[in-house]
Length: 407
Picture 1 (cartoon, rainbow, N blue to C red):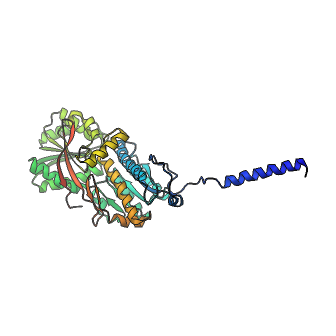
Picture 2 (picture 1 turned 45 degrees about the horizontal axis):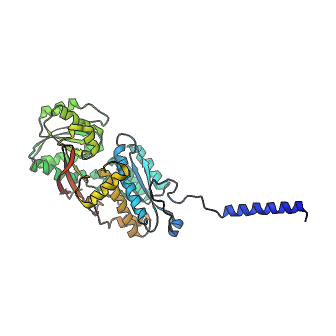
Picture 3 (picture 1 turned 90 degrees about the vertical axis):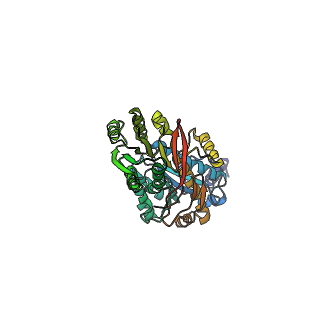
């Protein structure tokens, strides 16, 4: 063989070796759920089982932009915190947990497309959410169609667990469940008898009025008026003037956004003497900061408050503040706990099969910061209700009560 031919032969052999080496390298394909990057701090290598099966994927959709973005993000923060803790402890069934989030912008149309993407593209094993009850209701037909289990720790419309949909579970009390101990406190313990509603003109506001108004009447109170406002409004003085003329003992303020804080602020600027009975986000630090002096003396019924005096809550609050430099909201804890409830159900199921997880969720018996969570025949939990009052700019617990045994 000539030197020239030998050189050509060696060159071809080297090229073939490089090609074969590349074919045997690391697979760059994605497995279930890996097309959406998790922001979890967990970076441990997966087990051999995970290498074969991929991570376990949960989906979450919240308003991460728009007027409710603060609360949507606080819910995601809580879920991310749970995701990180679970992965640090070894994951679920030896596999890494990945949380995939979608932004609905608070829009029902956006909800349907976000949920369908999570189910069909990200192939989630389950879903958690959503800040608006309308968003949860919009997702429910898709849950049945694709047979996907879903826990909401946020949506409070009674209708959600009255439809017979066996794929949805709720870990938070409904408006009707909160209303009984809250109205009893206002009427029996504070001695109030006349009420006027000023509520957000949406599904949350109207559902709350529908739950509370008849209960006030049944408790011996009187509802003087029911008024509504758009969440985009900023001037409520004309309605507050009407409230002043009615002279109610209680102004029932129903709002989940900044508008409610402005109502409280303007009510105090007008020296409105009525006690403000908040329904919505009045037990949050953002409400106190936005309403300023108007927040003083405002009550709220909530599933969680950061001032709960237990070692478990103190640890939760300290860790949350260390991660996010903010105080956790009721939505932070709700989604933190929902991730853990899902994790335990998947462990009981022994797989990420959606039907097996659904069946395992029915056996839930989880004790968390907000109390015991176990689902009844309608997949509804009955956690504690905390009645709060803002005193000297601080959120205090006026009473801890059991949620009413209604749907």
